Image (cartoon, rainbow, N blue to C red):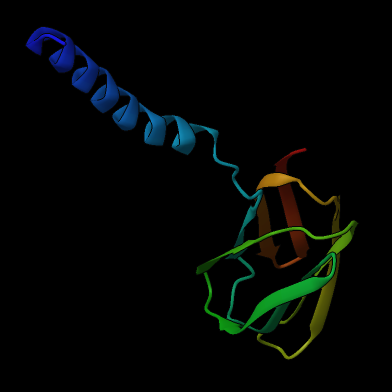
Length: 125
């Protein structure tokens, strides 16, 4: 076997070994998730903030006026969303949001206002 043939074979092996990890990375599965953003534009601080979604929930003890909180989650199951919070005057509020379905991904905006909550779902199946 000539030296040139051995060099070509070595180069071909090196190329194959360097391309395989890149192909594997491109084909790897990604987990679908939702990035939820809660914005407090209610005019005052809120407390006991809780967001319920299918099979789970998340929240914060408090969120100052004009503050934003971001939380990332995965939807397991199907069902409605709901946000509950207590305003600065110690009144509890509840707002029902969109129906979520397992496997959806994207962004979910929740804005707390003096008159309630505004939902902005941007989700794909």
